Length: 460
Length: 81
Image (tube, rainbow over all chains, first blue to last red; front, side):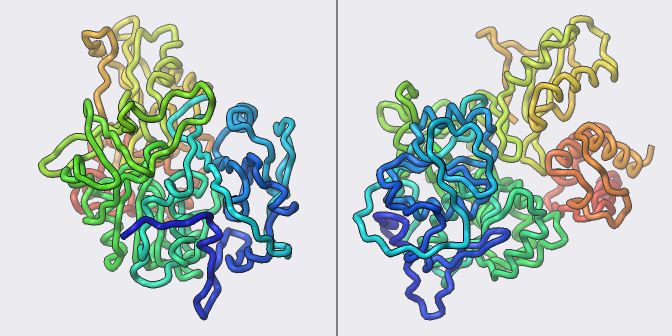
């Protein structure tokens, strides 16, 4: 099947079916997709934004979705700001991505917007005269998930983003998609594009909405296809409202899907097709697996096709038309090597005929989708005057996939105490985000140091 | 200390560390309504593995995810048998 083709997103909004009614739903509002042909969510004529570089910085996912649909093919560049990017980085984002116009919610404050002009976006839609103009390719700028400090962004094209979406992908009728995963992150954006492309509807989550309420909303909309990270799905399995939905298709992405979560979902939704996808913001969608087993068949590595995969020094490298075009910024590092392969930084181990994921290169720890650099945590622990050295490493968690733990060597052997452990944890809590604070601290007599003079970092 | 007491005191400790307001701990308390988020549960399960020697949500092939506090305690009590 050939990849989906679109000159711009509006090509996918046709509502030719008799019952009509394709919708995009948020927590507080719902919009008919067909209405976007003759109305707008923006408080300026979208044509005024032609050729501009636009940051979509709304609180709400629905308004972000509407703005993206209206501006694709119009703006020169759309920068999708995820809700969890700290405000203090906004100036850097605007400068790095050369933002000229900021699209925000009605209720949003106008701080830290510099010289950029402001546009407000909100349902309900207001009627506008249908404008006909030739769409021009828009650059889609997405934030990568693995950094601390100044955010890193990559440039994608719509064709690359939609490269994994195949014609006839929704083989079982017109889908109603639901996504736990925010559409301003790569994995969630895939679902947004799929829902538009497959002729379906989409129900969006809200960060502050209890999982039971979102499940009830999904059920009320008759959801058939639902996507989330393994951490999202674990919360569903812990919810009394889990049985409110009976989807035909369940998709996991954004984190490693382990056997427990795949089995748990298969038991709860016995008739659903359950797939886990591998993708990264830089490397794009690698593959989908729907045999119900963790990891993926080793035969995929080295197989011919649009997505070429190889394993170098244990880490997965991908070359495909779906990878990002480049990092944003004039002095940015190259995204791919000379042969066009992107190093995903995801470490693999071969178990029989299957590859399994064995943590991140450089020991980066993924706590429910949030990445932690062990060195950052070690630096804080090592500030304590009684600490000689420390090793921060992941431990497997059935809830968040992995969790941060620390092994600490003290200056004085035998000085360990509950008070000292609390002091070190207090130091971490004062200086680090919650997910970076070690769940446990173990006092050890020594830590292994490799021949290179660096701490040995075992994988989770 | 009983398994139940170990669990409830660890829950209180995690909630205090994370500045979370905890709902009254009864057997029929829905865990998602307890005030603890995913990160709190992840911390809790790792610490209980250290103190009780078992992680019932990873250990067996037949994993069921707990919905209530009663389910949660039961999973540890069953695993200890």
